[in-house]
Image (cartoon, rainbow, N blue to C red; front, side, top):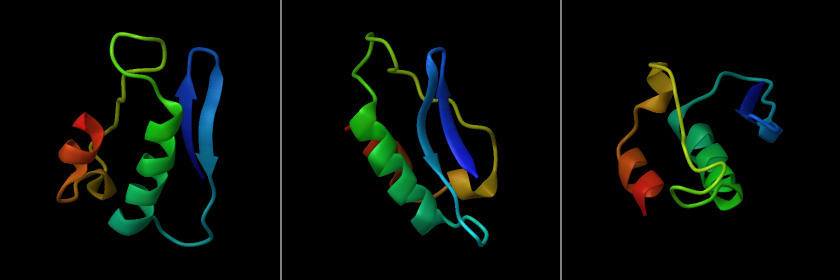
Length: 65
């Protein structure tokens, strides 16, 4: 289960029956970013922990574009 949570509740939720990998996480981020807003609007800050799946080539570019 991977939720994206805001102060108002769950923005996006995905459930896999296997381990998350960079490909699946990138798909999750693509959907989530469509729901989020540009800075400094509400729901415009993305915070992730240091899980290995959060480190893949191109993530920063996807988030910043």
